[in-house]
Image (cartoon, rainbow, N blue to C red):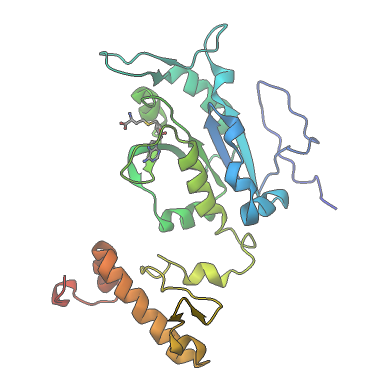
Length: 269
Ligand code: SAH
C-alpha cells in the first residue's frame, strides 16, 4: 500500500489532481526537466534499474513542456539572434514563465542547471552531490541555446557533458539524471558496485571478465580464479592504476596528490 500522506501541495497556475498517479510526492528525489520534447522522457531512464526505481517511487520525474509557456497563438519559444547570425535563440521571457512554474513545484534548495557545452564539466562528484539533495531542475536547450539574460537573472549554473555539441539538451539531461539517480540508495540492487567503480577512488575501474574461462584462445587472468582475495584486490588495484596512468594523466596526477605523493616524482609523467 502506498500512502498519500506525503503528497506535496504548492501554488500553481494550472489545476493538478493530487491523487493522480503522476502526482508528486514531497521528499522524493525529483528530476525536473524543462524541454521542448517531453516525449523524450523518461526515455532510457524508464528502462532497467532506473526505470524500476521510477516505478517504485525511489525518484520521480517532472517534465515541463516549454511550448506551454510560448508567446501568442503559435506558442513561439524562440526568435532570431540579436546581432544576426545563424539559428534561433530560446526567449528569456518564455523560459522565465516555465521556470516560475518549475520552481514552484520543487524544493527551493534544488539546484537549477542549464545543460550547455559552455558549462563546467559534469563529474561523478557532482552526481554524488546532486543525489544527496532534494533533486534538480534541468533546462534542455535547443537551437543556438538560451538568451543570456535569463541565465544571469536566475544565476543558472551551466553544466556540460563534454567538449562536443549535441543538437539539444535532452540526451545530456538523461545522462546527468541517470548518473545521479543510480547513486540514490536502493536504486541499484548492489550498492557496493557503486563504491568500487570508475572515479569513486579517483581511478578508472580495472578490467572485468566472466565465463567462459577461455574464449577465442584468451584466458581469464589466473589470479582472478585463485580465490585468494588479497591477491585479487592487489591485482585489481594495480590494473586500475595502470589504466588510469595510461589513459588519463589528469586523473593520475590528482590521484597521486590525493595520496600525498608528488606527481613530479612519477617519472613517466
Ligand atoms: N550554440 C551553442 C550550442 C547549442 S547546442 C554553443 O555553441 O555553445 C543546443 C543545446 O544542446 C544547448 O543549448 C544545450 O542545452 C545542449 N547541448 C549541446 N551540447 C551539449 C553538451 N556538450 N553538454 C550539455 N548540453 C549540450
